[in-house]
Image (cartoon, rainbow, N blue to C red; front, side, top):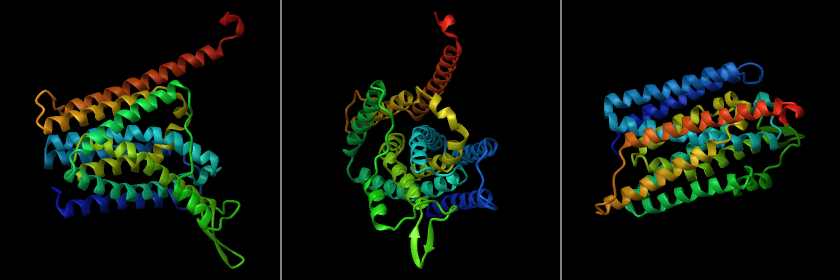
Amino acid sequence: MSEPWWAWAVVIGGLLLVLAIDLWIVDRGEAREFSMRQAGYWVSFYIALAAIFGVILWMTAGPVKAGEFFAGYITEYSLSVDNLFVFFIIMSRFAVPKAYQHKVLLVGILLALVMRGIFIAVGAVALERFSWLFYVFGAFLVYTAVNIIRQHLKGEEEQVNENLLLRWARKTFPTTETYVGSKVTVKIDGRRMVTPMLIVMIAIGSTDLLFALDSIPAIFGLTTDPFIVFTANAFALMGLRQLYFLLGGLLQRLVYISYGLAFILGFIGVKLVLEALHASGVSWAPQIPIWVSLTVIGVTMVVTTVASLVKSRIDARKSEQTPSEQV
């Protein structure tokens, strides 16, 4: 690990402080819905915070490390957009009141951040000791990309299946029938029970961990520095709940976003395999510089987002036409 312990302490402490302030500002007073304006301010704040961190990294560690951070951050943030579709399904399935959704997302994302930190630590050690895992990660990302495209071509919708942790929580904890404000536990007739709020938080956190099976290998394809991997994930996750409220109905209009994400995953998968071959002494295997990766990721997301919005506008105009005009 190239970064000193105090760098980790400063970054983690700073992130926790920002999240604590975020929670205090949003949750003080009575529960209320998250407005579009409020979400926009917070999304802008977290993006600016990530940009400032990247600039500091540029000045202290050089342009390569900064480029790896920005490429990893954009990749993780882009993949997070796909997560939001599933978060929306979970919120709808558990009928979470809108006034409490921001708290569910925050706690669930905090759980995911802790679990991802463990995942990153294990992955970094494993890759350092077993270099052949780069081939496994690369092949897995290419397979995931193909699978995403296949599902969307077939018109299969996102589904949420209860994982082992969620099923265990349902069976283990006595749960109230309805929500009790924003409380996660409540005492009824002398018996301590959990509310559906806790179950939803577990669902969000554990589901996001499953998404890490794609995103963590993807960022390891851009950098093997655990510090960069962690910070890119952390900054992407921190702004995720505000992005959920900001996008709102726009999520349904991003029809091509999954194709863009599939292309990014496939590109990084091929990059991983090529770099593993190059490290093994295969002369014809090229090394893809980080600026190329950053360009490919950025251009792909811009193109797919614009194409999605254009198609959505065209479809909306067609739906507004009268039957006589369509004939």
